[in-house]
Amino acid sequence: MRHIEFRTEGHNLVEIIIDDVPLLDLVREAELPYAREEQLERAAEFAPEPAPLLAGDYAYFPRRGFGWPSRHYLGEPADVVHNQEDDEIMLLGCTCGVPECWALLAKIEVGDTVVRWSGFRNNHRDWEPALGPFDFARQQYEDALRATDPGRAQ
Picture 1 (cartoon, rainbow, N blue to C red):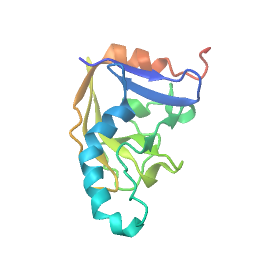
Picture 2: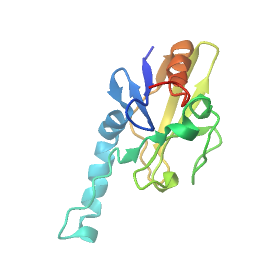
Picture 3: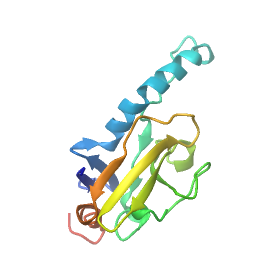
């Protein structure tokens, strides 16, 4: 089983940490081959500057609306974006502040004892990074999620 944390200390975002590694770092590494290929393909559009390297170019969500008691990370979406399938949840949104502009989607399956994240993909690119699946003990997962309660003292 993997270990998950939903951190909010010092800011109003829900930062996701899996086995002591930020989700953004895991995604960046997994998307890098796709992003490098796209960067080369689009070089002429941006010349003489380099094309952007979009690997892991996402943002975490605000504590308000996505922290506990929201059930977003329990498979009940707080927000739905363009190209999102019914069984998917948006884990990360765009750095511009408009989540659907560039979103990381995944399936969240909540079982009696296990929460599984799988099927990671970008909502605007044919990027299906080699990421996951991640299995978490449900009790540890829910305890970590409850720690995002805005009513909790920091």
